[in-house]
Length: 251
Image: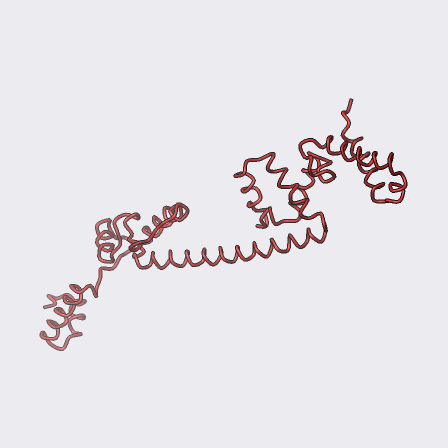
C-alpha cells in the first residue's frame, strides 16, 4: 500500500490492520462533513485557499459582510469606528464571533468611560460653583447672570451651549471651570465696565449711572443730614462718580 514510500509506510504502520485504517478514514470523513475538521490556512495560501478557509469558518467575502446581530442599531459615531475596524478584522481573518466579542468589549469600555466622565463632570461643576460662591460671595448669581448676558449678546444660543459645554485641554467643561468663568467675567467687564455697578442697564450703562446719581443728589439737597450719616450711600456716590468719569467720551 505504501508503494515504496518510506514516509507513507511510517504513517500506515500506525494502524494495526487494514480495517483500522478504514475506520480512521471513515471517521475523518464524518468529522469533515460535520465541520469538526476545517482546512488550515497557511502563510502562503492562494486566494482560492483563503476563500475556502473563510467560507469554512463563516467569514464573509468582504468586511461589510459581517453579521453584527439582529436589531443592532449603529450610530453615526459608531459607524465611523466600524468602517475603520471591520477591514482590519477581515484582513486578520477574524470570525464573526470574534468581531462581535471585540465590538462588545469596545462598547462596554466606551459606556464605562462615558459614565465616569459624566460623574466627574458633576463633581467638577459642584467644586467650581463652590469655589466661585466663596470667592464672589453674594455677587455669585449676579456675576453668572452677567456672563450669560455677555454671551447672549455676542453669540447664538447654539454657540453659547457649545462654548460652555466644551472642554479645556485637561478635559474640564468650560462652564464648570472657575478660571474660565473668571475670564469670561473679565471680558464682560471690558465690554461693559458698569455692568456689575448698574446691572439693570446693560444696554445703556450711562443712563443707569446718571439716574442713580440723580437720586443721591436729591437726597443730598433735601436731606443732607441723612446723606452725611449714611457711609454706604457716600461710598456708592463716589463709585458712581468714578464710573461716570470712565464712561465719558475720550477725545
